[in-house]
Amino acid sequence: MFEILRKKKTDTTVLSDMVNKQRRYDSLVRALHTDIFRYAFWLCGDKHVAEDITQETFLRAWRALDSLNDDKAAKAWLITILRRENARRFERKQFDYSDVEQEQLEDVFSSSTEDETEHYWLRRQIGKLDLEYREPLLLQLIGGFSGDEIADMLDLNRNTVMTRLFRARNQLKDALDIPEVRGQSNG
View 1 (cartoon, rainbow, N blue to C red):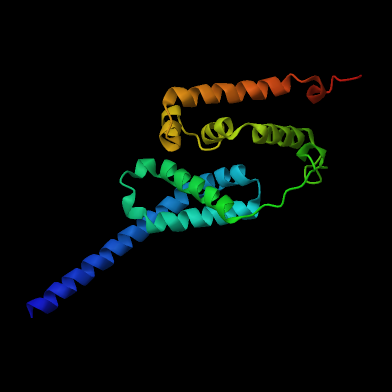
View 2 (cartoon, helix red, strand yellow):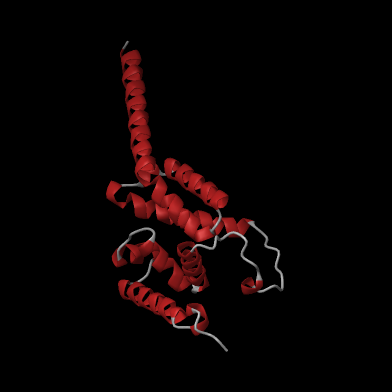
């Protein structure tokens, strides 16, 4: 008799824990899916790949949800999972290399409106930054993280992160000063 009552109580506790985990996970997905997808898109530049990485990130988050001790750190936790997923993508994939320089390829996707052209140019310039500068900049711009949060995610000193952010911005400013970018190159 006591065995049956104990089993029933255990079953109820397990069910309650599962329901709580599902609720916590659902609220996490609702609150952060857009931000995580946006960051994934910035990392890979392809909508479909970004969707896959985002889905895999949330799948891994479900499996490891019990390891998230502070819900306020959920966004940083998910970004870390996303970065690892993106790295795994490169471990699995073999790239075909070509001798054509990226700058020589014709852009057939961007429209000719001024805003979209500027966004394309800025995205391209950010993409040209070394990873050590690009990653903290994207975490700050897209993820909205502070220098301290970025330092924790990248396992760096805060001063190193701030220096990299400063240098990344300066490299973008320098790119703006190139005459052909501003249309002043008349020969």
